[in-house]
Length: 531
Image 1: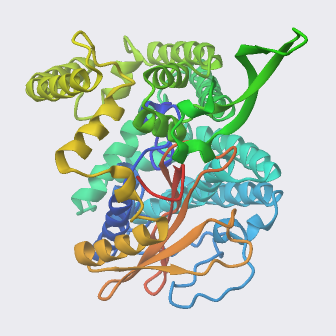
Image 2: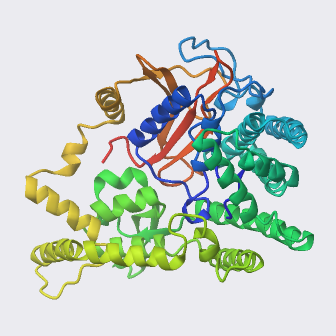
Image 3: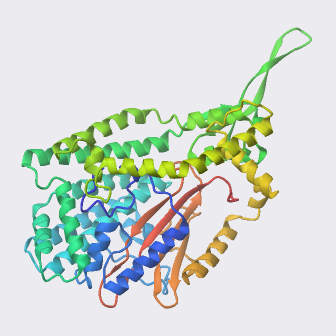
């Protein structure tokens, strides 16, 4: 999906713009929260915690006088923790699924007021502040809807979040092609009174991003680009939903082919045994045997590849897990075609050229050159490790001509580690139940960042599942840094794999009031012991 001025800050967009979630470590997210707070305190910036463009915009504003009316939810500082009845993620408007409709309405209404205000060409500083508030208004809806539709167990909430997501994304396309905003950005970029280099750089990249969205095109071409953006948004959503609804599965018989400590992960199934018994009457009795249906989503697939000693089981699971959903082949073809058409309209040879031109790499050729150079640097070490694992497999299986297959790597790497250090990783894992890992994380956070990381109670209505934990991050000198929601356990219809979602950006509302950032970390822990 094309990165545009008001889309750059939507952190839930996926790598390759297919709305996959970005895998991250908890410490990286915590560091991001700390940097977010520090940058705002030092520069007076607002709304940190989103990618480059709006981080620069927010740092350029010394304070925020314009208040986003709907964002009255959960602005209390962490220290108060009053358990009043709240809505989902602390937003009072989200007490019911239908609240998403009002959430979108208020965000659009407030943003439209700010667009009108900016159209009057106030001072450059006020333009930056108003654009920051637009980003906060829209981001609150975009991020909450993305999180809800990928993780909420209530289908009514998911459906309303889907509707909200589509509405707010269509509004984003309007913002991205709004000439009043574009001309305001041009004014800011030309303003010689802007002494801050960051403010000038922010204005420059805003202008570049507007033009990358086609703001400079003739009306008919701009309309077509907007249509393609909407089409791409629908295709990205369809691609992501297909992954959730069709993760793939493979049936394994007999059940003994699956390690016992993984049995609870899979659905038992019963089928006819290939062997038969003849009774005294000569009749043929079919014997049913137990097996397992393995859903090949990332969490369970990883467990099978790491622990199943049966190579055929690993192979079947690996191939199935990397062959679904079949429906995405057609979706991907349409997505490629739509992106290529956008690139052609914008005057580029390919979407790759269009996507990288404003970035440091500047061209696909530079990217490929970097990748080839990096490959040459790491290839000798990679070949060495590959040979070591392959030789280990040959020694274990007794087969001289054994190749190392993709479904072998995790299994034999784990065995090599156990052999090298005389440790059984499954035994080691038993010492790391989830609650103990969180306690260890608290120790790491304090030792690395000097901040305390502690559990706090959720307000009634704030959570979307009983397993969700809420953590606060506090620094003795810099104060409260933000919230983290931890949603770590596997369940049906939850987004597969690891991800983090931004819910609310940190931003200074006034000289005395600060909106704390909130981030949600999601995982699919296959069983209570972390491996």
